[in-house]
Length: 332
Image (tube, rainbow, N blue to C red; front, side, top):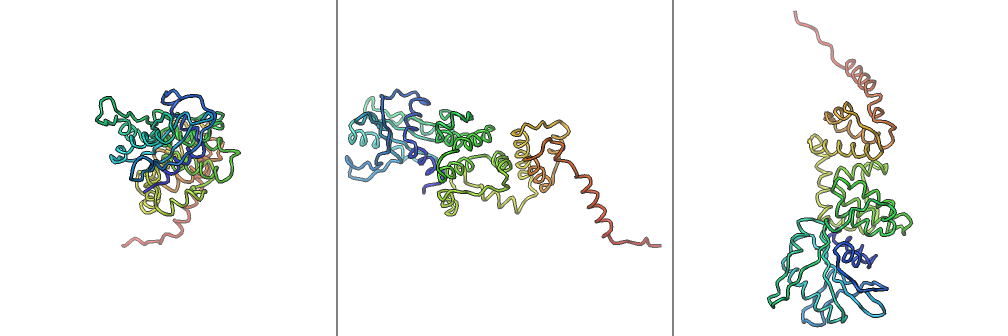
């Protein structure tokens, strides 16, 4: 069953076919012939075998004629049967287009990338397929807005590979800058993909900076997968976490996520958090209070503004409670 992450990654390569060639040459160091055009080809690989096989994506590089072909495979989980078909994809495609071919496996998860990179022994002497794998180590951490504008698909891919790391918020902000000027649906899709790839703290921090408490998916593509429950990979567990958070708001994990998001926003806005403020935030066990601070952090001019008026509010609440408390008489 396909997932939003799987299909989203493929869409990046469909929208920018040169992305496959860029990863092979720039990230993985594979020499490529000169080419003037890159286009997506049919992924049906049935000409030399009786059974129908279909790769995830095929990109053809041309210079008047085909000069190089790339089989792009997105791999999110272990599948030994898939590895068995990769050599067939290459030989079948080479037979069809009549030029050298290469296998590019995209695996945003580091452990999965290592598994995909294992050589495939064919049995014939010297016939060993070494998959070329674009994992987190090969996918750049893209935080330069100028570079991201030149290659927005690479910026989104960077977010999908590194969104759960400490730099996740910075990468996501870079994606926001990179998509400016693109057509509306493409902007919505790329922002959805970036947001779905962030860790909880980074996502909450970005939501606060965007002025929204809960991010709503904007593209039809993302809403389709959310509605169908196909939130595999980085999306898996997000809605479950939200539901559990509503039901079990007292859990320390929820408090920790709010604190981390608050620190992310303060850091992103360049507000200095002194030792006293940090200790106060870390000691807070009130989820509602943490949410108030997080909302304030999006517009506050200093960290001290987060704590303003709190003593007045507490005193007022205390007075109200005291007036409502029933009077008791001491027994004699």
